[in-house]
Image (cartoon, rainbow, N blue to C red; front, side):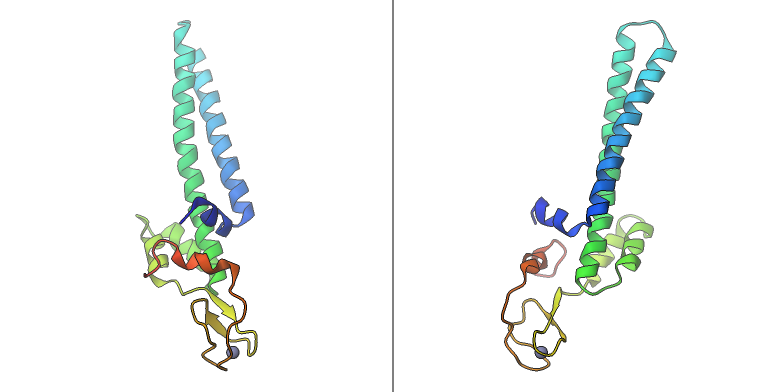
Length: 154
Ligand SMILES: [Zn+2]
């Protein structure tokens, strides 16, 4: 799966929040590094070093938190497009430890469905005909590529 496909599933507010979290963590790392460096002593090399260490820590935790947020957002958006409970599954992914919530979600998630143009029943995107009324599905949906997401049974 490409990164763009992944990001297209993540709701926009979550993407913005992930960016904000990342920037905040880097800023906090920079400021904490600089302040700590100033407190430690008069050594000229030290504040620069501390600031670099702070930036590294900020980058590390910032990207971890941002990736975590994006993954939660992905579960939310993906569950929504599959007619599952998005909030419930996001909470499962959030609260079940050791990423088991994510694994559980990808193991149990339903195939992406679209409403039948004739009778309105949900039909899977890989079905050519509606199982309820037998009409042929006319327009392939743009979200078809999502069925090849990781974790999907192949
Ligand atoms: Zn139908």
